[in-house]
Amino acid sequence: MTKHALTRNGLSLHEGLRTEISKRIAAGVYPGGEAIPSTSQLSDEFDVSPITVKRAVRDLQSAGMLTSVPGKGIFVKEQRRFVRALGDWMSSMEDARRVGFAPTLELLSISKEKITDPALAVLKPPQQSMLCVRKVIFADGTPIMYDSAYISADVPDQMVEEFGERFIVDVLRDHNVELTNMSLVIDAAPVSAGAQQVFAIPNGYPMLRRLYHIETNEPGFDVFGVVESPFDRLACSVSFPAERINPKR
Image (tube, rainbow, N blue to C red):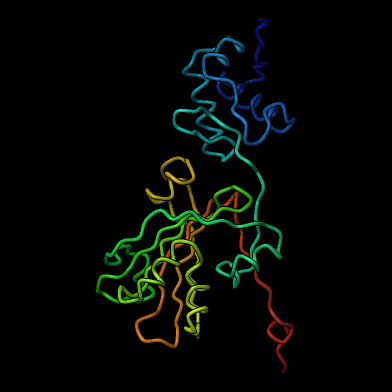
């Protein structure tokens, strides 16, 4: 096999390798969703040490171009980005399909616990134990949201079963629970331990985080929660009526 010599141009070896891998990703030599060659293969091709390869790969992982899948290898991350209107990110599956993607849900756990995430304190959640429903939301097979939702532990068993298969807001509506208001706090925060496993991204990776409080007309049926999404997979859009932009004087 002919070895590929890295062009130095003032770059260190790992920077040169990082640049070459980036070019191959952009050119489709390493397609999105596919594994790149192993560390030993890249080390041999470019005549560099495995440590140099790992440094280059680590830089590209931090940049969001590569992702590690335990036991399988290093893969090129799909660069498709889903843009959702700020108010409809928890809308029904049918609404989501109408705006261009087919969402699916994967239930991770349903447990009874207190809200301990300090970020949610801004929404003033109750102190008692609640029903926590953790899910991953996929768009066209790509995980885009890690959702931890808290609702009263006194909800009927039938509704609990449905929470594992559908969006909580859709379940509430179908059981004639009216949604009266939704509050959102959007910020950036390092990835949580749960989301880190779901998205296979490095510790400390910045995430788009949405804290929410959904109020209903049923006492004790309010929903509190946190949704995390990688910035390169999901973005939020918002539009304002003309009168909001150009108020009458």
